[in-house]
Structure formats: C-alpha cells, structure tokens
Image 1 (tube, one colour):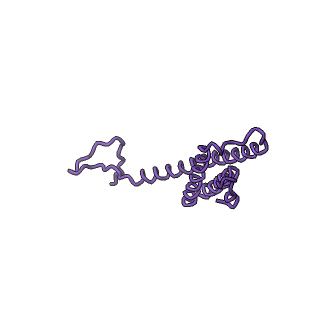
Image 2: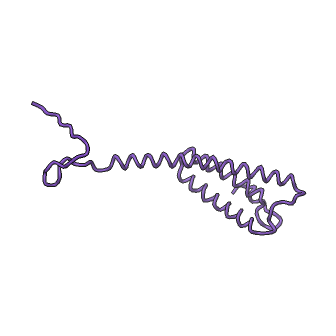
Amino acid sequence: MNERAETHASDGTVSLECLLETLAGQAEHLQQALIERRPEAIMAALAEQEKLMLQLRARQDRPEAQDPGPADTERKQALSALATRARGLQRTNRRLASAFLDVANRTLAFLQNSAAPRASAYDAAGRVRGSSAPILVHQQG
C-alpha cells in the first residue's frame, strides 16, 4: 500500500479515501504491468487489489462506516471522483487483460496445431489410407 493508506480513520481503520486512492494506484500499477506484459507484476498487482477489495467489503458491512452524511457534500464528491477514477482504470485494465489473453490463446492454438501429428498417407499395414484431401505426387522419369 502507499503511504496515504497508512493514514487511519478515528476508529483505527484505513479511511475510505485512502482505500480508494490505493485501489486506483494499484489499478495504475496493474495497467502498466499489462502494457509491459509482465505476468509476475500482473499477479502481484491483482493480489494487492484483491486485499483492498476485501477491506472495502469488510468496511461496507460495518454500519458505522457507511457513506458520509448529506451535510458532507465535499467529501462525497471527492469519494465519488476517486471511485470513478478507480472504475475507469479497472475498465481499461479489463480490456487490456482481455487483449493479452486473446494473444496468448491464439499463440497457444497456433503452437498446438503446428505440433499436431500429421496424418500419414499409409496405415500400419502399408495400405493407402483414405484421405479427405488429395495427395499430390510429383512423378519423375
């Protein structure tokens, strides 16, 4: 977590602002790792984001840690901006991850197809095997 996440609310927990800022920061780290195609960094960023999401869920379940009251509009706007930023980064990361996985899947499919054994024109007894594709023979002499 970044140094802002170390700032605690009055009840000893990490403030909502710090959690959202840290989540957005982790989303930026994930985005960079996805762009650079670094699997170890991707996994580390995802693990950290999962921890942050668990903290947010735990915070959401506590009645004393609900949204700010109606009088605190400035804080609401700041929280909304942070959440919107984190959401936008997550959306972009989802697209990047999808593209990364698509390339990996196409590469694996190509490798799998190129490594597949070629069908032989003859069976084990030496007879010509029926083929669905024509066999071209170059005749000399």
